[in-house]
Amino acid sequence: MSNLREAYAGTGRASLEWNPDAERSIDRVAAAGKANRLGLDIWKCRYGLEAQALRDAISGLAVVYMIRYPRSEIDIAERVCNQVMSEYLAQFCTTCMGKREVIFGELRTACTSCAGSGIGRYSNEARARMMQISYGKVKMLSSRMQWLYNHVSTQDKNVNAAMSCELERE
Image (cartoon, rainbow, N blue to C red):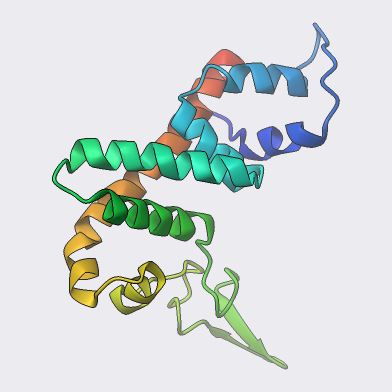
């Protein structure tokens, strides 16, 4: 299965002319239309940098969250969804900017903030500040946030799979 994320991101700036002999931007747009709406909103905000898609993704995730956790308060659900999308969109370590190492002149050393992974880690303290709720509440919500983050990742993968199928790239 091929990765269509970059190709899809470029469709916003491309010509939508049709060509029966080659895959064009219009084909990717049509294939994306067959994907799950929530997954497509996630793609649009991550790879197309669309602000409205981010709002739609957070709203869609809040619905999914409330179905999974029906006793939750809607305000908390929205904060969790907003935080999960923030972490999903800004995955890179803020110290090394995802490069996995820090360079000091001639010296290269593994980034100590991310342990050389390039991926940003969010502590419960940082999440509590960002979500403007108590540390204890964030700690209680951490497993729900992980579930929701995995759901977002799955939605991303499902859009790629649906588009690959539609574009006959399997």
